[in-house]
Length: 348
Image (cartoon, rainbow, N blue to C red):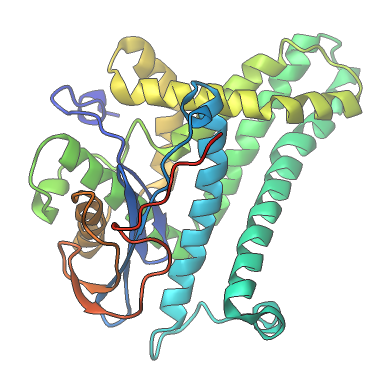
């Protein structure tokens, strides 16, 4: 792991971030997001949307991390579903077919209502899965170790390491799937494009290729920060009965998420030795969730990046785009706001 190529001294850190989706990438800039998807016919589909201005509460340190975590989960799930929807609409495409439940919901609630229902159902199921597998299960399973040791700190540390091991095994298992491997390649392309932009170079595949697929501000590192901080924090809470352990862990999730976000922001701005040491677990995990991308995947990342690096007056759009993220053919009228109809800031 070459820290000099990950924590680049000459780079200027930005707030630009992204997420890999099915055959594409979503980039998030200062005032908008752009998702670019490569269709089976090799053309690029793009959709840009304006971001709502954050309220005052969402700017408070630690607390803002909780809001961003929830927002990322909702937006990420919606974008993932959107990418599947675009791909399944392509003529002659294979895979991503609607299942019986989706077809039934569309018949019952309409296409838009079904999409919203599936979105929030997916988020709820994702939360329940995460809580069940990575919060409740580890503390329940580790209960058997109380017959070996009564040291409360040791029991909590065993639980924490078991949780991390469980997560790594989960990543290793899903990484064997072909579609997930492609997503991980797009994840690597996203990081290379961000490195290139933050280094002040022109966004081209040739300039992006030399950069690392690892980035200190990656959401994967955020998840690792969450598990490491929870390991340390839970070790101070003693070892009460199972019900209290589960309750305490659930109540502390927002605090842990907030602290993890602040740590991630710090890691993205600093290249100190302390930051590098703290970033190692997350960067090692990124070695599993990112893969070396192909040139066509870098082109998708660059198109999405350029689509969010525009002036605030630029209207949002949906359609086919070129390799610079510029609209070349409308496909539908964009849902949501246009640049001339910016959402009002919500009062918190």
